[in-house]
Length: 124
Image (cartoon, rainbow, N blue to C red; front, side, top):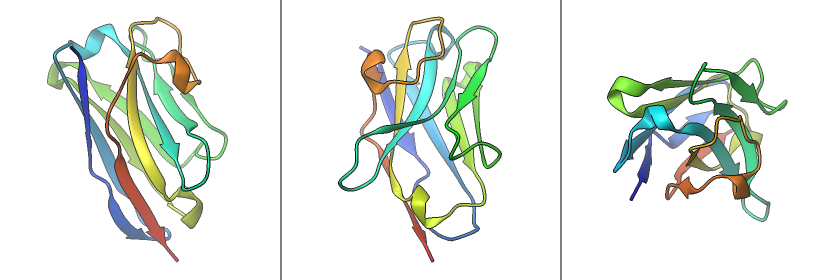
């Protein structure tokens, strides 16, 4: 059974940076398209970024383009989300999700696996 474990969340001031990590156990990262979603209090879970399992194609939500970078290190079975120029609207629980699809999916229901989430809080 594939398990995803997020880490790297915390509290940072507006304008700061954080790097989230997602470790994969029980499976091989290379076989999965990976994504980050986030959910703020009282809001639905929303797409942040995804990276394909084959050619490394990436896709980002408009709200994070130019500020966030998704990457994967297959040899270490770990995916990352580098978040720069954070603002208060980025405050949310961030979830790592995985699916064996070859497509870069942007809906959370399309992914078969997800982690417990890591809290990111941006203070003004």
